[in-house]
Image 1 (cartoon, rainbow, N blue to C red):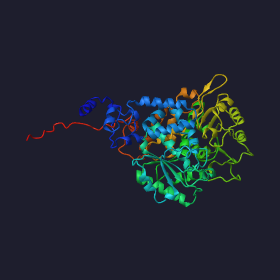
Image 2: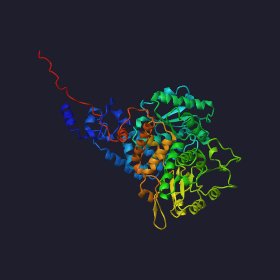
Image 3: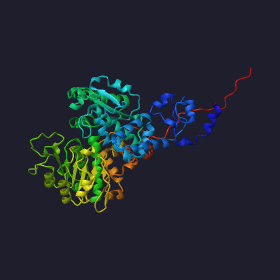
Image 4: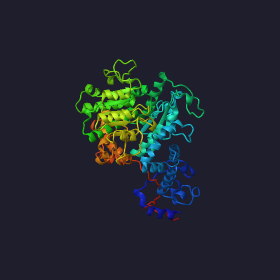
Length: 576
């Protein structure tokens, strides 16, 4: 055996391609752990030394063959939920293979792992449940959250994605069924930005649900109670934030996902100066929307300061985008008052105007203008406001009607139409409707993916997907995330769009390039925080690009062979 081991040591040409990892596990546990399982890719020596011989078929496979098998099986499936269950099954068995398959076909599989399919998976979470993922913290655990964190097997967490499940995509209150959102987001942190999966922690905070259907569902997996909206809720979130930082460090990124509007803004304001927080629904959506507008600016040749934007929806996404657009306009020379006057909002009660009967909250007040007259519908708002861009973030479905799109085409040579609501059936219009009804002149982006559109004259347009995945993985190093840093991210994203891609109708780079986009974003963020004395880690790396890329997780299999060597120069024992 030793002679064979010595021979194998001399035949280690893959030392630069694969990593040697020490493990104390042997036998079946190695195959049951998705972080160490390689399936039939365990080498003969690994099988013999690690107690795996006979537990696997004799064939020794490459990761290439394994990936091919899973890709072929996926192609046989037509139902998105079936694909989701199959992919998540791979993740539960073989983590590196899962990310290999996901990264090689990111354009087709991101809509499965994340929106729109993840929304369907969340609604069915208790019905398709196989194995728990992430950490479940209930309001009954108050006073013991640090103990629960200690139960998590990893001690070096860099990114936490947390939801309370109250506003999952455009689907409403799904309670603990919302766990699919943090799990999916963190999959993209690894696939798009190369963060090690063991450094990612998905969390759902269960304070109950107001969804009557779920409270009657025997397969619901959370507390069977109405949402607790008392001071106990705030106390629970406070305890959670303190426990995360105490356990994992001050530079741990805590990303809020799909909290209700009434909590999202106040929690962001409450924690942003004390913790490294990021609200993807407010800040991520805003950054990716601004990037789309900056790209549209290139196509039209009109600066952002000359645009007038009408929002369909006035919730956290709309307000986040509006605030970031305002900052961008101010940066380009307008006063804050002038910039805000260029932004209008229309919600379920009508235009956001001063003195209207329906209540306007403090976050909306700055975008409430003097009423332009009697406006009863979104079409009337378009007629009166005459915007250059309409942005849909209402989650209410097809509100960009044929008449609205035609009017935008009449008002503008190149109308900007962003239908950003998720999932697909909640989008304000389809890509085909937008391109067809504006004769291919619109600059279109959506929250969920749409297929390329071919017009009657043969022109083909590839719609841009304003996916937050362009932004949040780039925040990969736990950092302070001020609004002007988000504008940097928006500009970086817009700059990576080529003229050829812009001519195809894209406002964002192809998703197939998202790993490179995310890494460039991360480099810019690292440069920003060091330039502004906001970094947590010193000494400052001289080559920021090299530093970021050196931290990227590798999907190649590790070798689990023990480190075997001889003691050179050891004296033989004395003769007796």
